[in-house]
Image 1 (cartoon, rainbow over the protein chains, first blue to last red):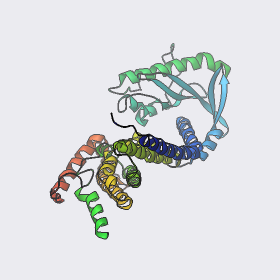
Image 2 (cartoon, rainbow over the protein chains, first blue to last red; image 1 turned 90 degrees about the horizontal axis):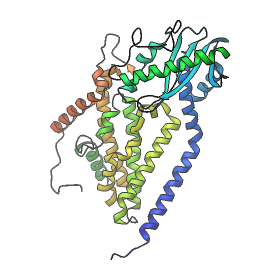
Image 3 (cartoon, rainbow over the protein chains, first blue to last red; image 1 turned 90 degrees about the vertical axis):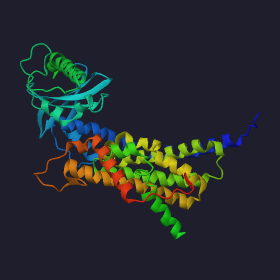
Image 4 (cartoon, rainbow over the protein chains, first blue to last red; image 1 turned 180 degrees about the vertical axis):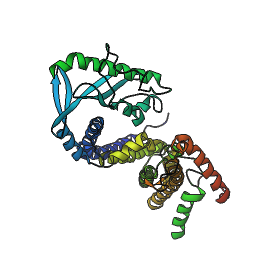
Length: 197
Length: 206
């Protein structure tokens, strides 16, 4: 039987400890900055929904702008955001989350203050197939929702792909999931949240 | 010494170029080359990781038990890749998003382990470090060449500056991954035609 030596084991332990310490230190030093950047990414999505320009702003500046424009409120036990631009109430941003084809999809919808049209849509996180369902992230898809008329709707049929909106070819499942999630959240917004605003 | 350094760079960049001669590191070469700036950042990351991994492997080579060397190399490479990933996330978030998962995948980039195993394991620290830099530059050279054509044809721009004016029609094909297959194929063809292959005397890695 081969003789067991402790040297290789000690060597691996030592080298692992050294590298782990170095990485842990770097991680610790940068953790706050990374958290701020991730927060800024979400805040940029919010600003996109209401078409506020944030081109070239740093994470801190985005945060300041976000605080100016959005005010978090609670209505009917649900969290949403009021949108104020130049001191006027422009509308509301309503978060949505539900299962799409491959996992949870999180997003936000902007609704105008007269409740007649959508301001825009953004998807914060999803697990859809890159190149197929993942294309919901593309501006061509999202921009269709800007100014989309949601007044005079029967039941919860707020959006469908029969008129102005185009689904994504090759990604019917994801397109339908987006429709289902948006419709159910809009229904919730109009039937429960709106009265308390 | 000077001649030795010259040879390291000549091999790393041309005669043993990791991408078009050894056909290593292809997946990232295909994935991030639709814009010059992305290729540039990716290459800098790779140069950093290859050179410092080679240096560290070489420094530890006389203390590393032979049968553990692969484990140690992987550990060292992963540590440097995580450093690159964290730095990008903290200070260049836009670039981090653009490169996506490919930064983390540097760990599995065969160029790095290849250089550690073939060169750093048997050579002194300084030449190993330079060998890592040379291979990294060889990789950069190929990525930038592919990206130059893909960005030019796909967006009509150079490092993000539009140079073709309004009348230019973008070749959407070039922005998509298959465009990279064609560019890489053409590059390997050109390289094999114009850069003489090293004479096979000993065979295998030196």
